[in-house]
Length: 499
Image (cartoon, rainbow, N blue to C red; front, top):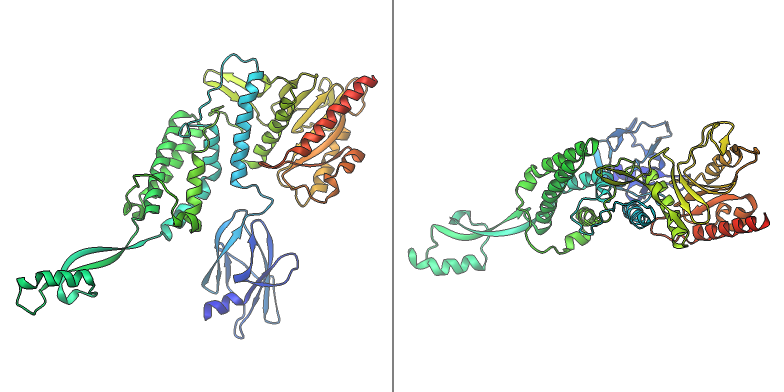
């Protein structure tokens, strides 16, 4: 009763909505909530902790304490502690945040397009392509780096609350210690009565006892996966150099530390055919573990640049690269791709996708256009220059004296207007060297925000202001971007004819 009372006295709300009891609150990551605690008659101030951090009330008014808290930017199980009593709740993912599936999909799309575009690069050496899921790949390593912290949380949740089963085992014990008599015990006694005085119970009776066992199929399979993962990480440590090797070794040591836990020492690695059990289907933690290891071996695509260090761990940077490769894909499918050698660099170790921050990567098209990633404009640039500051837009399409700038924005759901306002510096600040005229015709934001009723996404807005937003989501429809590129090509052809 005390726990329910304490939890029921703690209320949450967001954006001025109605107060909701803690047990009924739906929390999302990266969100600020107002909280209210109704004090008991003798209470002066409550003791409230969230994720181990004390929450101090802003004010106490008429027997009620008020404050604010912000949920961390991750989803999963969290705890409130109210007056020493712990309450469990859950933080759900923000809809604006990309899922791990989308993250993996972007990696796969980037490497797949890089492999196809290599045919247009005029580079003599080839890219090694292997579809075997057990081979090392940049996509798999990036997946491990991006999701290893979440795996750590899952494993510790399993260690703290593993599934278990009651197992029966037969053993002989003194008759006064037998607690349960089942059919098997009675059958044994019938068979062994003749060995003692007739009509008496033997001094020692064979009875069955039931004990909790952690040696379940799910725990055994999880241990097998962890053993395989440690071996895989050791392979990455040997196959790479520098910072990658150090991190791979650290991850392998972490997995080894988990396997040394007393819980896993009670479990034997599973040997046999893998199946999806009901625990893997319904238990939230075990289901997440199954999904994590299932995705781990689905990254056996093109092995491009295992030792190359561009910031794939940062989702916004990966989204920028993915958008650039999607634009290249659209032009390629239109038969316009001519030279893609600017996407790659070659070393003695092999060929690497070369899309680093502030490195100008250029792809040439058959119609004379050029696609640039992280192109630099400054006061002393040869053809196009800036008169205020150095500018490095993410994606630039160059057609003669015209520039079209696309800027991927990973999270701008609530401030699209502000993000578009920043695009004015590109449209107004980049000039042609020979006549000082503005060179940028269009500026657009690419965003995973769904195409909704906002004017920024509408064609009328695009045509009127020559700027706006285009929705582009991994796994989603790219038709809007394709339509805009079609319009751009028609516009450029008409301009050439007019000249």
